[in-house]
Length: 164
Image (cartoon, rainbow, N blue to C red; front, side, top):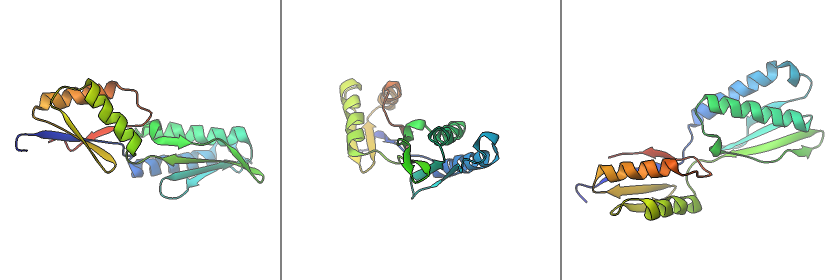
């Protein structure tokens, strides 16, 4: 094992940045003229969920749009946000969105398959919980794998950590 280099492929969100984006969106919604009288609101819904509501379907979609803009400004990938469709709940429309933190088994399999099919020979992958460990004897091979993964258009956000 000595002489092997490795890195981890993860799908993590910076919860503090998401919280800041949510607070900024809530402030903008409370101040904007077009949201007056629409009972528009945005708040946390559990640890990785966000709930948006307003009195009209187009207004709740506008709340989602404001939140997405705030996430982009804070460099949080929109691929980590999974927003549902607006649902009528009494006199309000609600959207419940969830934030992905960590790779699930299917996503980890997609990452390892891409590396196995297109990566350099001698690169090993290992799924460890909600991340994928990639190791090789040469650091150049690891950089090739990073480039390969960046070129892929996954439907989830990925980052690289623990480069050793």
